[in-house]
Picture (cartoon, one colour):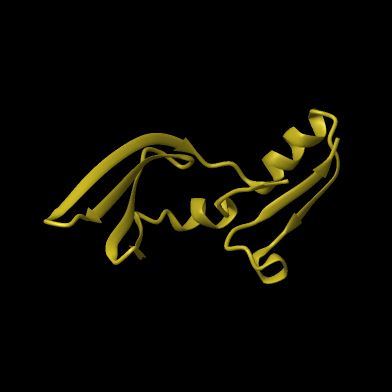
Length: 106
């Protein structure tokens, strides 16, 4: 079992930002933001910004990596090629999880 972003949709839409999302940990706030810089039709630089409230001020960290989008068909083919069987997808409406989940047996 694994989950992944819905790249079938995202490679068409090419979003440039996701978020912000707001959290609270023991009364201190945290803001999480993603920025996506598309390099071509399938690859993008994923920037993750996390801003945290401390007892006296705020601090921000940044991390980045190059991501490659993979369609459901491509992942299912790779799983089949690796001898997995009964590959099937659960979508958010069915699973309640926010992104597609793939199930396969080995």
